[in-house]
Amino acid sequence: MIRAALLLGCALCLPAAAPPLTFIPVQPKFAAGTSDYEAIWRTDGARIVRALEATSGLEFPQVPIDVIVSDGRPMASYDGRLIRLRASYSPAYKKATLVHELGHRLSFVLGRRDGLDDHRLLYLFLYDAWSDLYGRDYAEQMSRIERRLPGEYDAAWTWALSQTREERQARLRALRENRP
Image (cartoon, rainbow, N blue to C red; front, side, top):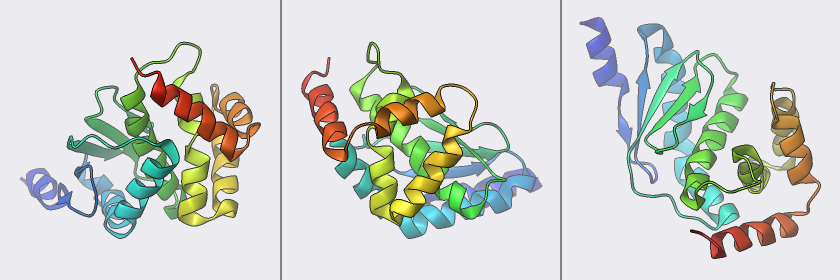
């Protein structure tokens, strides 16, 4: 009963920006983290969408997204209907993670690309979106944090940031023009 009340209370579809997001805590103990993400979306959602769309040259599909908040690893499903976020992150990293996962969602519009993994594609515009939203120092700090994650994050950031913003934009333009 408590869980159902929490789900109804916290699973608000906030109309701050497109696409519509519904934030859902997996368990009651994640309600505070869920509220943090809701507040970010309410305050910055429209700006986040504008920054991601402007830096990628893509538009978000008008498909609702369920945002599951837990302590699992953040991710975005390939069908674009589910994002998972970690409740325990710091306020600054919650913003970065929400923008990161929404960036994945937006990049799915381009489809899978041979030779270009998900993070290399995302990093063609994520750094610029973070910079436009919160400043270059913030983008530098968040990319440094992500470089320490296990896997190919460091290599993907090194590859993307070895290019200028203009070079990243040109690469994105070519990808958009050659969509399947």
